[in-house]
Length: 566
Image (cartoon, rainbow, N blue to C red; front, side, top):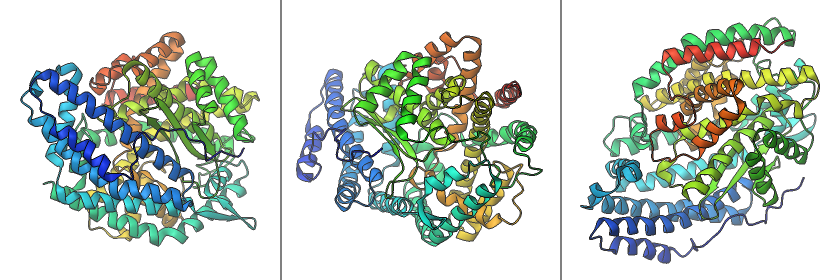
């Protein structure tokens, strides 16, 4: 299916090229006198109205760039936002935050409604340094360069140049020889870009370290915990790493024998760890993918399908693979339009099916928030919450995978694969989290040391049962394909935390489907001024990654997989 890239799906209520006009509107907010708590609330409303207009235009331009990284005009608009609007916004955001925090009426605001906002804005005031603005701009330029490299990356396959998602689809193949060939081809492609990506990461680490030092921190890791307003400590993360290593990895290793047996292999090699047991891809064309997911969502809850079909009809889904398209997938909220946009670079694979369902969890969450509370301000967005509803959507649709896998054996294997993914989402993101802790607390590391550390951590966690002999270098270099390390540093552990909540949701669903879906929607539409724990509670689950919960959920997951009869 050819995607209409000219379709306008977002609103540009401001001309971001009119820098003086944008600056004047922001300055007018700074000039407004605030002489009462009602004045302050009115000012906050006016500030929000302006900021969501800027946000929607910037978000739309960013999506445009990901959809076509090779279009010079689109790239020019995107770079203008990053090089001109972003610095302008950071400068004035700091002044707006100071105006808010210094107002004598702040403490008269309703704590339930404005408490989280105050906490976040106080953190931003604490962290802001004028000298960091050009560093943030340079950071974004490097991320854009990475996107361009990955967007243009192709892999040679049987005499043709194929986009990376195609090669990923071959890693699913039941034929072991095909999987190994795909693994080797992808590794060769990564070798071509490795020096360029290393140079980008080397510079990003130094820039981010300097940002942290300028703000008074010893390292970027400590800085980010404050910047992200985390509701847990660094030690809590270390404890979580240890709990997963102690309880989840042994459970996975026991189940690995089941998957090895079904694959007919004595040992897992790196290309066996990617294999899918189903006989064929779940779909051929993107239209078939959308038809099937719509049906699955509708069988779960009519509202879920309604939102998906609305997005499909209004050009808010871009799912196929094509040259020049950015890598990965994401869901973005358009706060003025009240819409969400799902972007993905997909070839027909099991992962692409699950990834679309995952992103629709984000989309449903976004629509429910907008309908209940209007546009969601940035300070309310917490990835530990957002990922609960994306992982949760995956597991709520687990019993409907027969829409794509009609053969009974394939259906059971698809369920096993999704539950295996739950294991990998508990283990893999923690591996990435540990990697980032190491990178940013050792900012003077070399590229060689980085690869060696990545292999060491991968072998300890997500490649624990895999025979990696002879492929240490390829595995060590494979971090280069994870965009999170470039675009959203320290955004990984949230996947693991939220998966524990999603597994509790699955447990609830197995006991009472109607009540579990009701709780899902309650949580997804809850007041996000609350703590993460309170939002989880409204979803019928606990925000808890202590040893007791990790152990219990690991046992539950292992039991569910074993319960899928042969």
